[in-house]
Figure: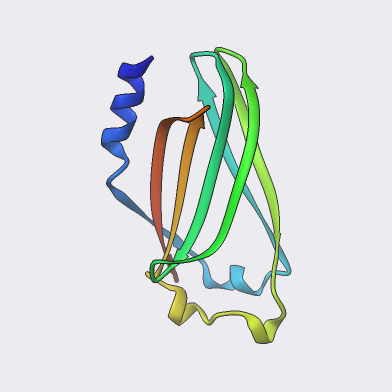
Length: 121
């Protein structure tokens, strides 16, 4: 419903923080997973995810999920392969400067948006 969509929009301005072990940057690949539930049917569900470094887009992914069954729980997962070691950005430059923004849509209607600032520890 529009009312529940409006509730989620009010939450979208807060930037959450996450602490990630910097040794993850030495992995050859990592898996990223988002779990979501919906009480309502959605006919054209999609998510858009952008990774920013100092406000510049590093990466952008769009996932078209399509139809979502009411009352279901679903998972979006992707595997990210690392760049060559000489192309990796050091954790000291990334920490606190990377923001992952994820937006969820049903068609053109934005349902929710979240932002997470990463700190490498």
